[in-house]
Structures are given as C-alpha cells and as structure tokens.
Length: 420
Ligand code: GLA
View 1 (spheres, rainbow, N blue to C red):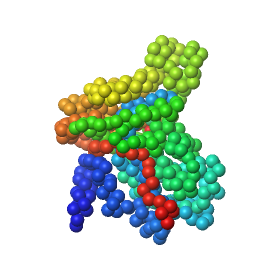
View 2: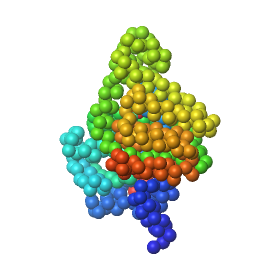
View 3: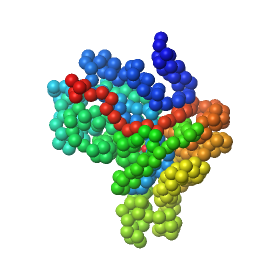
View 4: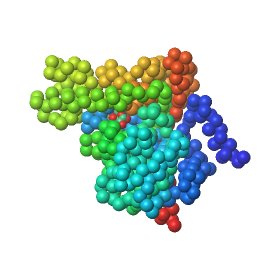
C-alpha cells in the first residue's frame, strides 16, 4: 500500500467516527486515486463517460430566508460534491444510475415529465427538460451520479446535482450559456419541474463559488462579489443534527406565502414588490395592519438583510467577534421570529455559544433540522465536541461534524469529447 492510499484509507476510517476534516487535499487525493463515478459508469453501461462534471454543496454563513424576498445572502461552497458522468446515446432514451442509492431510473426525451417515484432522478430530468424548453436539441444519455454531500442535511445536495448535470450537458453539447444563466436554469428546473419553490442561493453559489472566499449575493439584481475567508486558526465547522427535515418543504412554502402577504399589505402604504423594499421600521410600524404572527416573520427578513451587510463589513475588517455576534442574532431571529428552528438545533447552537473559542453559531439553510454552522478557533473544536457529547443520548440522533474549506464552484473534471 503506498502512502497516499494509506492516507486516504485513514481519512475514510476517521470519517466513520463522526469527524471529517473535509480538506481540499483529501478530495484531490480521492480524485487521483480513484474516480468512483467513472468506474461505476463503466460497470453500469460498459463504456467510459464522455464527460464528468462536479458541483459543490454549500453552507450559508448568514442571510437565511432572504433570497426569495429579493434580499442578501452570504454563502460559501463546501468541499463536498456531486459528480455526474454522461455518455451520449444515438436514440432518445435516458438512463440514470445513482451509485449512492444503487438505484436506476429510465425516461425518454419525448415523454419527459416529473414522476414522484423517480425521486432523485427528477433533478437531472428537470435540467434536461429546461435545456429542451430553451430549444437545445439534446439526444438520449446514459447518466451516472455519485456524491459525498450529506443527504437531507440542508447542504444543497440537490442544487449540486442540478448544477453538475447542467454543466455536464452544457459542455457535452457545446451550449453557450453564462454561469449566472446556468444557475437560473437550474433553479427553474427545481421550481418548475420538481415543484420546490426555492430561491436562487444554492444553485448560484454551487456554480459560481470561488475557493477561499464567501460570496455576498444580491438576489434581486444577481450582483455579487467575493469576500476572502482567510481565517488563520479559525474554522467553519458544520454540525449535522441528523434531524429528518420532514416539515421543511411545507413550512418553507408557508413562510413564502406569509412574506408575500406582508408585501401585499405594506405596499398600499409604501410601494414595493418584495420584502427587500421595506425596512425594519416599516414592518415595526405596521402593527394592526399585518397579523402579528406574519409581522414577526417579516421582521426577521428585513433585519436579516441588514445583518448580512453588517456581517460582510465585519469580515472585511477581520472583525470575527462582530461577525460571530451577527450569526448568533441571526439564529435567535430564526428561532423566535421566523420560527424555523427545532429543539435539536437550538441545543447544538447553545452548546456552541457556551464554548470558549466560538465566535458565533447558528442554524444554516432552511431549518427544521439539518445543520448548524459555527465559527470556531481550531483549538476549541475538541472542547465543543465534549460539550455536545450528550446530544445523542438526549435526542437519539448521532451528530456529525465537518470542518469545511471554502471551495470553488462547479467544474468539468474530464471531457473526452474535446481531447479525443
Ligand atoms: C433553502 C433554499 C434556499 C434558501 C434557504 C433559506 O436552502 O433552497 O433558496 O431559501 O433554504 O435561506
């Protein structure tokens, strides 16, 4: 066994025990030693893929439930990815193979439609359908999917699958489409084909992320810029609560609806088309005009927008204390005003707040389970682990910790069409 194989096995072994230092090196090693998606593609279809694309998951540092209100978000890509391998066919058949689910699905181009029983395959099907809708003539394809983004954890494995599929198809068929436009296409596939009305954040960061940086994105104009995350001795630590996100989709739609109602009630007083157009005082002054439960939710959105801008400023000044405090306030607001937290996430966040060496901690993503994100001194990680040791006994879920490196956006891993 050579030393890199040993290192890889060591990492694989270590990750079984809850603690994954998902560093870039690990992934580059995996890439050079073996490419499971390619190998599986060959085994499944008896031919090498013509193209392999990879897209990352994401963690949002601050700015939650603001994207569908045309506000600001501050995500970074993480070093967990989904890979999609494709070979073109001469007919109109589509075959999908998921290495992780050991599951196969079929479809054809002329009869492409959402089918509940196709579960994970609806995402690549949605992407194909978007390309067709835009008038790009695609042929049949054999598709293999493999990823290491924790499933159902709110780290955007579905957006990564959409983006990786879209990038692979774009490159394979030589379709001219900008990176922003590709993110929009992927969001549209999720909204219209899969039927989940998510915002643009996940697809956008998965496509456009820059290594070593977080991204401040204005979801109204899609103007964005990168902010360096050079955090000496400080880590972005994700804690996966493992709480199944059963309520997430229904509650997400309800929150969207409440935000829409709020705008409808506020706009006769002050013109606006989204909560982005309103300030905290507009919402505070609307007592009696908007039902109290809805008003609380809107207050979260408008204040969260402000927090994102302040957090960016703090990070630019390398003021991690202020950045961390804003993360904490964001969590309180998601818990008390927007009401998307749960006892498990609150417990994990509280233990983090009590740990010396933690700057800030909050739930990340849509909520109702999923993950927390914590800004923490590297040396304090063992102490935090001790603080959460009772979690499994109390809640019955075994948490996982991932130290994440701000990673690059989607890329082509291999294109045999061009090099042939
Ligand atoms: C999910 C959605 C995003 C965003 C977040 C909440 O991840 O996909 O668009 O709305 O929830 O901030």
